Length: 317
Image (cartoon, rainbow, N blue to C red; front, side, top):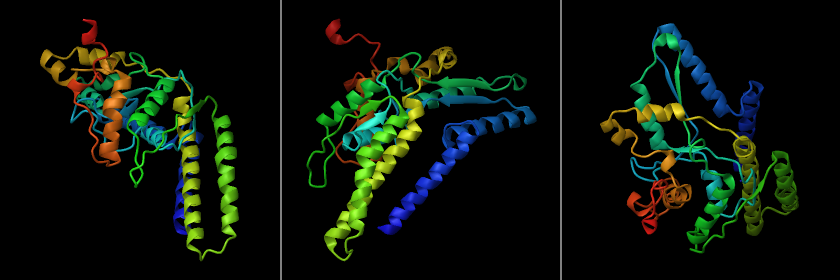
């Protein structure tokens, strides 16, 4: 147990060091720093070799809308840690605003744009052609709505304990300032766990119940540390307001030949009904493909309005 705790702390320290290095160079975290460095290196190589460069910048990538199958996702990306923590009742608060726009785009929409953009290279002397794959400028979704929708979903389709009992979800309270959130976490969660750990640490370790209690407190401390780490990383995206312009990408896709339109632009971010997308595709896909839960399937597209936002419902015809 002590070794696992030490490893967890070492990973947290390395993560924090990476964040400090990134911010010393003007970037929010190592992820955005690495993307910026990659573009700088590629542009230099493009100029040196006299070859064209196309850059596609997606916002937050989420599960696929259509291909290879609706709801397909194989790893944690933008929202998954927060979604799972909501469903497991582990997240009572999170930095953010009700009206903050979380910009996201399905993974297969990004792939379609990459393929299309590769067929329209710029002249080498013109510099890189940059396309942004985003949704916030045409179909924004707000954090307050997402928090409500995720909570509602898990009330209807909860996680289960090993004994098969439903886990009660918690709708996180959105706090519009990172420092206020971290202070709340330290006093409401960090301090009680630290005090309990100090008390238990003085007990003889030979008893089974003491070892179990220490392990449970270690997991609780890990959950607190993880929540604070995620909050610090995500706060730039959940508190600040950004708008990414995707008009250049839309113009490219809409200018494709009719056959290519059917293959690469059959649906777009403007078609997404976000509530249905998360309820019927994304969260079931996350639970099936990432969390490996049995018996969960994303809906087929003809059974959901996930991509039918701009269509008139049959009841209104």
